Image 1 (tube, one colour):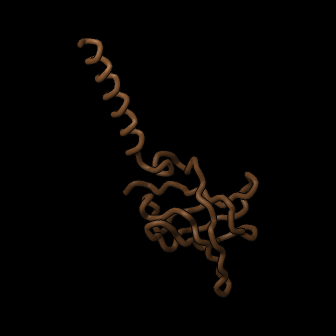
Image 2 (cartoon, helix red, strand yellow):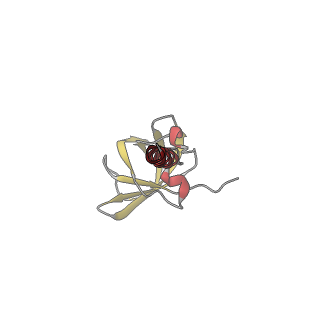
Length: 114
């Protein structure tokens, strides 16, 4: 009986640890920049502005005004700022840099806590 009690305790501790990991904040909230990139899903030009659709949104606590760094082949190619953050996707305006293509990697800079 004592052995199964210890086994249950170990199982419960492992389950609690797994729950703590899965309930953690998104990785871009925990560090200065995201560890895992989002991706550019669409690119649209409206006048002189270039807008990109990003595959992360407000459900991941991405906020309007967040700064994005866009990479291709591990090289920084452009910067953008989020202008609209919906639940599952966001739209950002490209501020500078080379032409952005669908599939480019987007790293989000963490916003300061207010």
